[in-house]
Amino acid sequence: MQNDKPLAGKTIAILVSNGFEEVQMTEPQRALLAAGATLKIVSTEQGLVNGWHEKAWGHYFAVDVPLSNALAADFDAVLIPGGERGVAKLAANPHTKRILRGFADAGKPIAALGVAPQLLALSERIQGRTVVANDSVRETLEAAGAKLADETVVVDGSLITARDDLDMPAFKDAVVEHFTTVAASLAAAA
Image 1 (tube, rainbow, N blue to C red):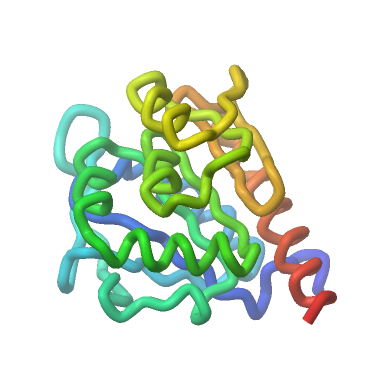
Image 2 (cartoon, rainbow, N blue to C red):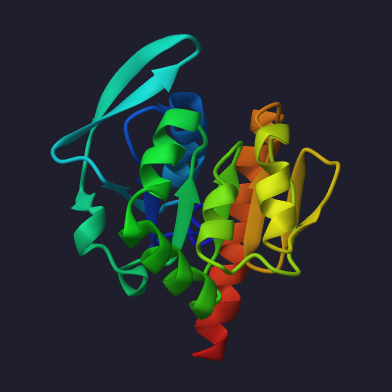
């Protein structure tokens, strides 16, 4: 059973704000749930957070933990979907910087998609890391000292980044494997 549910007992934060790219949350969310993870939506919003689907507002999702109350210590990993509206709201919130620094400093797995890697520049924990991101945020990442790769998905230590044009089935598998591997190495080191 442990092999069927490699993330059993792990709690993963999904960091979003209104306007996040819905499919970039729901697809990895399904894969992480199937791997046994407990998922908690952490948001700047209260009560419900609204996704963006293609060219219109999407579904509402219940917020489990307000960002202002969230601590990286309460989670084993974080998934940050893209979406320009949602990422801009997260960037404007000082708690985003605090929680992402907590994940990075603890070596916990971070998955950031689309424009979301720019939040890692905000947290000042991207220097020297190899990442991939949408063209619209490449300059921000380069200015923060990140090395940019021309691939769809890049893994660098505890960090996994992907562009919007990603192969979602491959990305879902990569996120589950990455979160499982990094969480196991953190547990072994503890």
